[in-house]
Structure formats: structure tokens, C-alpha cells
Length: 263
Image (cartoon, rainbow, N blue to C red; front, top):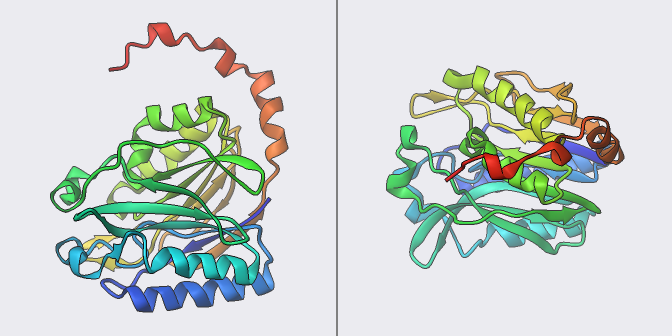
């Protein structure tokens, strides 16, 4: 599976301009790199313009979902569509979507863990579920930014069969060491590929740390973006190695869930 990550500098509060940027990037990337899957970052349509999201957010996933479906069909590429502000039943969610190369919606996910340090909970409603889906014949999971700090979420995806976990983020520079090391930990402990797309640039006094990554199930960093530059990371991965790695170090067979008193 060949994957292309867009480490994007999001224009705050300008969904149309950001959609135009993504369209141009996908067209260029598919022409030159011919990926199977492209990955976008968190809140790529608006950035964290929380007080104005109700005015500029999608409604029931539109127009962003249809926009991504059209791009997927036109370029025959599967899309991990990052996440975007999305109003459903009067509430604003941080919603992610995955699209097949023929334009079908494979999965929708609303961010479960809202960031108290950014007052997300004052403006957004949290999702309540997450599960494995299939993309390009591979079982995958999808989490959003702060979700990375909660190992239970990624572990359940792995237990349910995920061989790759996509992370879409606007992770801040102030906690960049956490961003890097938590990703490596999630890859090792769950014996999965980790593929992340983070933003760069600045908004409202916050700088994003880039460092989008591809990590193999042994924790080896296969590719890593810069901390400051908008750029593309492209790399092929071989998910057929996952069962062998899990057989050699049988973490999932050795688990004793009855002892782990998680509430």
C-alpha cells in the first residue's frame, strides 16, 4: 500500500480556500506519486476557529464529504479525509471520514476525546464510538489528535483486527515530544503501522509541530516530516508483515484482560 500524507498549513476560517488547496494537492500528488491512499490532517477546512465554527462548519458532512468523494473517484485514490467541523442535530462535532477509491464512504468517526486545554468541550460535542473499517483491503483504525493519549482506544482497534491506525491531528509544538513518542509507543504496543498527518503553521498563539510520521509495527520510523514546512510524505508499506510480527512477539495471546481493571 502506497500512502501519501499532506502535512498542511491550514488557512484559518476559510473552508473554500482550504478545499481548493486540498484539491490542488491531491491532483498533483496523484499525478506524480500515484498513491493508493492519501491522508489529510485534523480540522483542515477551518483550523481551530472554535467561536465561529457554527457559522462555517459543514452540515451533516456536507459539502466536504461530497468534495472528497468526487476527488477519490476522479483520481482513483482512497482518502483518509482528515477531520472537519460538522454540525449534526444542532451540535458541532470534530468529524473524520474515510472514502474508497470509487467514492464510497467507508467510515465516519466523531472525535471521542475533546481537548480541555483548548476548551474544545465548550464548543464541540464528543463522539461515543470507534471501530475498525477496511480500506484497500486492509483493516484500519482512525483516531483524532488528543485520542492518541488514550491507549485503550488504539488497543481496542488492534484487538479488533486493525493492522494500521491513521492519526489526523493539529498537535501543538509545545508538546511535540509527546506527539512523537506516543505514536511510537502505540505502534510497538499494538504491533500496527501508525500513519499520521499533522498540521504546520500558527493560529491564535498556537504553533503546530508537523512531524507527520509513518511507523512500522516494530516502532521503526519509516518517514517523518519536518516541524515547520508544508510538505508531502510518500511511502509504501507492507501490511502482510503484521501477522508474522504478532506471532514472534505474541502480545495479544499473552494479554490477561481480566487483570486490567479499566473502568
